[in-house]
Image (cartoon, rainbow, N blue to C red; front, side, top):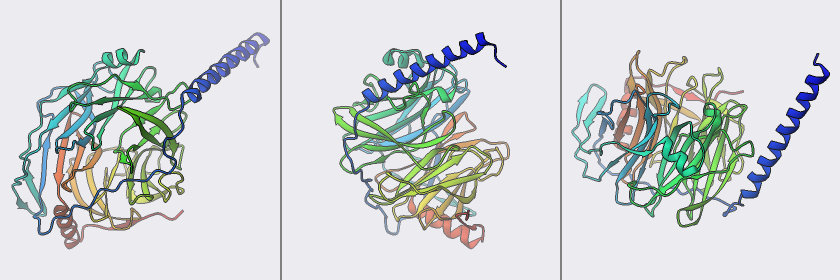
Length: 423
């Protein structure tokens, strides 16, 4: 039982905590702007399906000459001239002071794939060349631009619209670990050579903490972006960050929550048409499942999440809509904490049932994690992932390779059909 002195002390502590939360909430809501567009619509890229195209599959390591101990969480975008830009973070370990956000650029060239058949695999070499990795952001530079102490850097997401402006959404941590994270936004008009001053996003009244990003954004009709993000404060929560352009290199920022919690996070959201989308979430609890939710009103409301019957033990996933409307999923196909494989599965019914079609990486002693999908304007699909947590691996293929891989898997009777698990 507390003494009267201790009880009195705790009363004052609770009082000051309450006042602090009220002040934080006032600042948050005072600075929060209303949404610029009341009825968002997802922008669906016109289908690019080449007839009689030969299958190709190409792979490479983007940062093969780098010697840092860890590289993780890659992203990709395409500029109007076809230039590809990638980002990731790397250093001696997560949240270490030497961690930096890196980038690399690939100029557009004609694809001349070298194709040969190795059993069931169609393999090629990539004729493209990436620039030497360059530093996009350091802990010191972020602290200077944001005007506050930064303990470390984390996940970064690069994206770009038809205007060619690059945007970098990146994580900083000032206190604690990932639950003490904040999201920041910077922009570049010269393909990443220079960046405008970073802006910290006000997203939470609770000291504006615990916001992170991992998966690809969705462009909105009329401009703007829907970015899947997540929170790790007092649980795990999948969310949507809405970026509405309100001027040159400026956005109005709002946030909404996807149904599900408090163990679902790192959502991968894939638009099916202007109003419908599906979200696939990682689960940090012991379910060993990927959870699916859907919306038919452009993200205003979501269905109760249901698990799909593909195993995945608390690891990052990525989904993408193909040109023919099918969905592709990259995931660690395991019931344990090991991330020693990376597989692809395809769905013909908006993610309700799945068929395994290909293995991207498989090694009992390997670590292949945090996949990221991107489709370029030519219809090719790109996959980035962390290879052994030491390098960023890049894989590219076309729709014909997907079709061939699916046909080969069916011929060998390898795949199974996996459906939503009834609750």
